[in-house]
Image 1 (cartoon, rainbow, N blue to C red):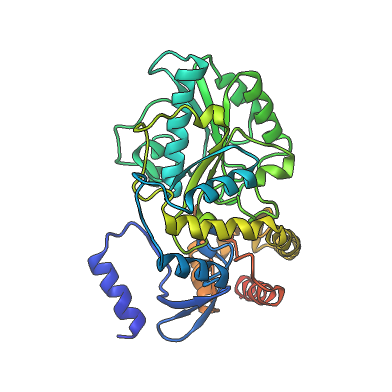
Image 2: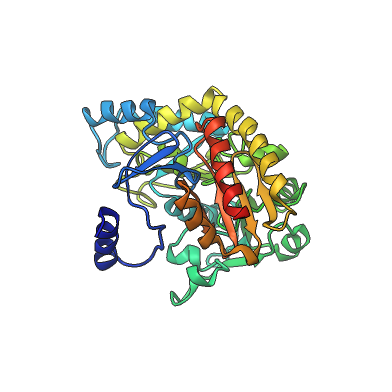
Length: 401
């Protein structure tokens, strides 16, 4: 067997089959390119679901990690360390907020946001104990913990994991009327993705996010924006909410915050909201560790210049112009997205999203499918226009074959 076949066979034999990766085995990567164990190069148009916004092996991030590795990597939160205060301060400033609660993974951050909202509801809003409700949107993807999949509408994510956690109300995404009707005196938060990534890069109707902001403010309800995929430059702004001039009560961040080097996530909000926690009520051994803080501080410094957001906006305009030319031609039914992020619905007659992804892999371009007929395109923000055009040429060739 080839090196690829051997590695895949071993993985199939010894790891749980909770993913269905494309049959490529990556051995190294730099920028927007990955090289497999056979020495073949592939253009990465997925960027680790936005975790690799700054590309593979970004020198600034690797150098920051190496320097911290020589000093101290973990103290637990039993002690202070010299990178923690700077990380919290700089991230709060980037978000225009006051306080940060660091965790590790995106799912942990969402869980933290849920706990924060409930605790705020009981201690500040005065909701009777055990009655707090959080409104979420259909077709959401916020993670895979037991609580999070309890408010998922995706059968694959939810099936066979009951009993499910109560306390959530699901309404259609983009429907302000349904949101208004679902609100009660016991509603403590609305948790939504400003753009739904896993659902196929769904952008809500114009005015939806400002409407959510207005409703939540009127009803004394927290607006929680899950910007784990959409945030930190991906859409051409630091946060996707900015496209409609909206500032939520709480940001949930992850993925790109760790630069594709280490897992880093965080909930960022006001002192009035995150101030509900007292020592011992929530925590994480690795949350806010020195290595994570060092890398995230470099990510924040890179974002503060605005150059990555501007690059995502400019290349994103080009990406959507080119993809728009494919729509309506028979091969592509619809294109959605914002910045360097797009969902492309493939005509069923041409094949499934998985089949198109496999054909693109043969052309040395890596994307990933979702929900049957959709492929997602989300290259590293450092990709060159020439490389992006090369990848788009390969997509055209696959769709016209």
